[in-house]
Figure 1: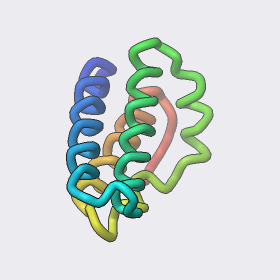
Figure 2 (figure 1 turned 90 degrees about the vertical axis):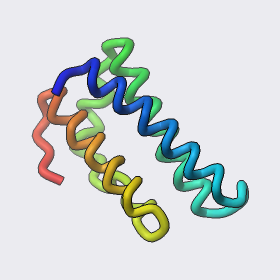
Figure 3 (figure 1 turned 30 degrees about the horizontal axis):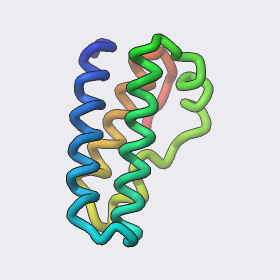
Length: 98
């Protein structure tokens, strides 16, 4: 896995999450959860693009609920979000086994 691949796959995941969010009422919890996950992934992608890895490395030990809020209504996206974070933390040399 390399940084460029993570950036590309992260951007694709953001698009997918936003597209799925658009399928729900804008005031629904499903829309909010999908939109917030998109913002989170987009933020990490931006940090990767800027080589600003320190904040991501610090959060690696604190963040262990990757995509769990999506599981009830979007299990596929939940799994993709969790996989993105797992690969991200592995790429940056942090040990995460979630």
